[in-house]
Length: 100
Image 1 (cartoon, rainbow, N blue to C red):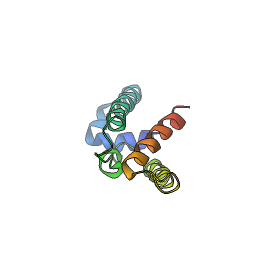
Image 2: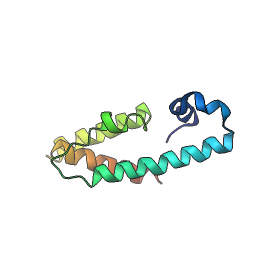
Image 3: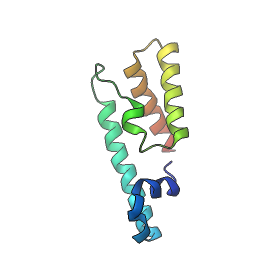
């Protein structure tokens, strides 16, 4: 989950002029945008890597990114999958877990 502190960090100097309700609304909008971005990557062909670090590091907290990377590694090696496929599956599983 994107903490309020992480949300403030992402917004930078703009956060000073926002109310708590506005900040929460922006965080919800960031989640919606992140969902769209993740969905786009999940639907890409297997030949295009997801690159969790490059595309999702600004959205996810460090612990969440590490969970995704670990899931992807397990799926890749134990499931004998291509790295790109394993990353997509890890993101799909994480979305399901985090939405519950």
